[in-house]
Image (cartoon, rainbow, N blue to C red; front, side):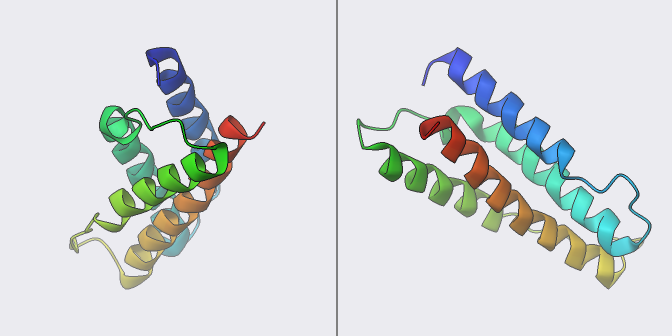
Length: 115
Protein backbone atom coordinates (compact mmCIF):
# COMPACT_ATOMS: atom_id res chain seq x y z
CA UNK A 1 0.00 0.00 0.00
CA UNK A 2 1.29 3.44 -0.76
CA UNK A 3 1.38 6.15 1.89
CA UNK A 4 -1.78 7.87 0.64
CA UNK A 5 -3.78 4.67 0.92
CA UNK A 6 -2.40 4.05 4.39
CA UNK A 7 -3.28 7.57 5.52
CA UNK A 8 -6.78 7.28 4.03
CA UNK A 9 -7.34 3.96 5.78
CA UNK A 10 -6.18 5.35 9.13
CA UNK A 11 -8.38 8.43 8.75
CA UNK A 12 -11.40 6.39 7.72
CA UNK A 13 -11.01 3.95 10.62
CA UNK A 14 -10.49 6.80 13.10
CA UNK A 15 -13.62 8.54 11.84
CA UNK A 16 -15.61 5.32 12.11
CA UNK A 17 -14.42 4.79 15.69
CA UNK A 18 -15.33 8.36 16.64
CA UNK A 19 -18.81 8.03 15.13
CA UNK A 20 -19.44 4.86 17.11
CA UNK A 21 -18.46 6.20 20.52
CA UNK A 22 -21.26 6.90 22.95
CA UNK A 23 -21.21 10.67 23.41
CA UNK A 24 -23.36 10.40 26.51
CA UNK A 25 -21.51 7.66 28.31
CA UNK A 26 -23.13 7.78 31.71
CA UNK A 27 -21.93 4.48 33.14
CA UNK A 28 -18.58 2.84 33.83
CA UNK A 29 -19.40 0.22 31.22
CA UNK A 30 -20.11 2.73 28.44
CA UNK A 31 -17.05 4.78 29.37
CA UNK A 32 -15.08 1.54 29.16
CA UNK A 33 -16.46 0.78 25.69
CA UNK A 34 -15.37 4.24 24.54
CA UNK A 35 -11.93 3.72 26.06
CA UNK A 36 -11.62 0.31 24.39
CA UNK A 37 -12.47 1.87 21.03
CA UNK A 38 -9.88 4.60 21.62
CA UNK A 39 -7.19 2.09 22.62
CA UNK A 40 -7.93 0.03 19.49
CA UNK A 41 -7.76 3.14 17.29
CA UNK A 42 -4.45 4.25 18.82
CA UNK A 43 -3.01 0.74 18.56
CA UNK A 44 -3.92 0.56 14.87
CA UNK A 45 -2.40 3.98 14.19
CA UNK A 46 0.82 3.02 16.00
CA UNK A 47 1.16 -0.26 14.09
CA UNK A 48 -0.25 0.73 10.71
CA UNK A 49 3.05 0.51 8.82
CA UNK A 50 3.65 -3.08 9.93
CA UNK A 51 -0.01 -3.96 9.82
CA UNK A 52 -0.71 -2.80 6.28
CA UNK A 53 2.55 -4.06 4.88
CA UNK A 54 2.29 -5.16 1.28
CA UNK A 55 0.08 -8.13 0.73
CA UNK A 56 0.53 -10.26 -2.33
CA UNK A 57 -1.84 -9.89 -5.24
CA UNK A 58 -4.56 -11.92 -3.61
CA UNK A 59 -8.18 -11.50 -4.51
CA UNK A 60 -10.03 -8.79 -2.50
CA UNK A 61 -11.86 -11.29 -0.29
CA UNK A 62 -8.60 -12.95 0.76
CA UNK A 63 -6.95 -9.56 1.38
CA UNK A 64 -9.84 -8.43 3.55
CA UNK A 65 -9.74 -11.64 5.59
CA UNK A 66 -5.96 -11.42 5.97
CA UNK A 67 -6.16 -7.80 7.17
CA UNK A 68 -9.04 -8.64 9.53
CA UNK A 69 -7.03 -11.53 10.99
CA UNK A 70 -4.00 -9.27 11.53
CA UNK A 71 -6.12 -6.63 13.24
CA UNK A 72 -7.81 -9.20 15.46
CA UNK A 73 -4.43 -10.60 16.53
CA UNK A 74 -3.14 -7.13 17.39
CA UNK A 75 -6.25 -6.31 19.43
CA UNK A 76 -6.28 -9.72 21.14
CA UNK A 77 -2.74 -9.13 22.46
CA UNK A 78 -3.73 -5.97 24.35
CA UNK A 79 -3.86 -6.51 28.08
CA UNK A 80 -5.51 -3.87 30.21
CA UNK A 81 -4.15 -3.78 33.72
CA UNK A 82 -6.58 -3.08 36.50
CA UNK A 83 -6.25 0.45 37.76
CA UNK A 84 -7.55 1.55 41.13
CA UNK A 85 -10.22 3.70 39.50
CA UNK A 86 -11.45 0.98 37.09
CA UNK A 87 -14.53 -0.92 38.17
CA UNK A 88 -15.21 -4.37 36.76
CA UNK A 89 -17.91 -2.80 34.57
CA UNK A 90 -15.33 -0.38 33.16
CA UNK A 91 -12.93 -3.24 32.36
CA UNK A 92 -15.73 -5.26 30.78
CA UNK A 93 -16.60 -2.22 28.70
CA UNK A 94 -13.01 -1.87 27.49
CA UNK A 95 -12.99 -5.44 26.22
CA UNK A 96 -16.40 -4.92 24.61
CA UNK A 97 -14.91 -1.85 22.90
CA UNK A 98 -12.13 -4.07 21.54
CA UNK A 99 -14.70 -6.47 20.11
CA UNK A 100 -16.68 -3.61 18.62
CA UNK A 101 -13.50 -2.22 17.05
CA UNK A 102 -12.93 -5.54 15.27
CA UNK A 103 -16.34 -5.28 13.63
CA UNK A 104 -15.79 -1.64 12.72
CA UNK A 105 -12.41 -2.45 11.20
CA UNK A 106 -14.04 -5.19 9.15
CA UNK A 107 -16.56 -2.68 7.79
CA UNK A 108 -13.82 -0.16 7.05
CA UNK A 109 -11.50 -2.52 5.23
CA UNK A 110 -14.38 -4.22 3.40
CA UNK A 111 -15.55 -0.90 1.97
CA UNK A 112 -11.99 -0.16 0.93
CA UNK A 113 -11.39 -3.40 -0.99
CA UNK A 114 -14.97 -4.09 -2.09
CA UNK A 115 -16.50 -0.69 -2.90
